[in-house]
Length: 200
Image: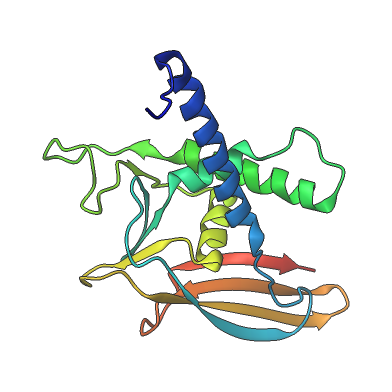
């Protein structure tokens, strides 16, 4: 007969599997970093970035006017847990910053209790972020750049297949210039997210 695990081994076995899963997800999240155009230069580049076509479960809803962005809290938790206590390399420094930003967004998510008494929004998310600080907004932008978000437009039956991310930088002198990142849904006239990129 095949050997079976004793009941006392189940918690340890599940813990090991969970650790392996976290490691695999963490590797996937950091395997292909997004390379932006050079900052501090004149640039006007727009990229079409495919997004998830099905909402993650569970999910966090971030309403931005007529657009709602859904994020995977498990991915955010992995980023937050992966931040090092100290850093000695540039990659460790960035992991610390990204982990702090992910933790900030998770902390900003509040439980959603719609009037009908259910525990989820119409999108199936049990938590919502209604106020984005700078840290949380960077995390939202990073998810859109990586294509790991689900983007819903009011009135549309299906999530947007992609978003347009515009990198706009203008220099007006050695110590004069500004860069912006603008995210929009193709076909819409205005971006639903605008983020400072660089300032000189």
